[in-house]
Image (tube, rainbow, N blue to C red; front, side, top):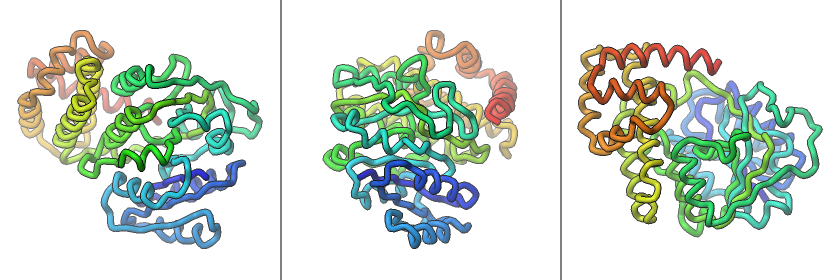
Length: 349
């Protein structure tokens, strides 16, 4: 059986579409765990309506504690051999679960799939119900573990011709036995990048991996999503995340081997902090307040160490932005960030 965990928070606009995509699966041996995380709209009503109509659906509710807590609740309540995470505003392909249950994937601990934007058609697979019976699968083992983690830290795909997110929990299947054996959970004290901490620990515990070359997950980009909202405590969140990540890598004795990838991750997060957090156009802070935040960021020893690698890490646009940030030319940084925010938002529409 496959357990599909769907954290729900004020998702009434998208939730039914998400649930229906799961119920439309050609493979039927699954359970859906809807974890309502203190929604103030009709989400809980929708969850209960579906659980009343289908015995495979179970609805739970809790006070608002965040997506990590909701996913952890789903893990605790799950009964399946496999665990699949689906966000409440996304949809899955009809054959996603069938491939997870296929015998070709049973002797592995981790299954990666491809994804695309909801409403778009993948170049490799259409969204209709005509699929090849056996998809192409690449297998990996413990010798490939550090390569997978490096690609995750650097936000790279598994292969150049695919669209596989190694950062997010969606578009994958996890063995529940591995999660339970090592008590792997999402950290509740990290708001953004909590999934990366969960994934890196799971990647370290898994022994075998399979990459299925099939687009089965369709992501809905929302301008009001958590990552793209102006988080009051965004800087401190990344501060906590960077230290937790480094501590885990040091405990697993992989930090020195993957130091360059770790600092590349820090620089990528710094770019997100500047564009989506500090200097975004709709921020209510004054320029002087934003400048003060930047000055405090400069005092972070991890950020200072990462900036030493800026000249050789990342794309040219990022290097230019962080070049001016490192030299404290905040006026130029402010201008670049505001332009970048508008361009990136337009590209994602």
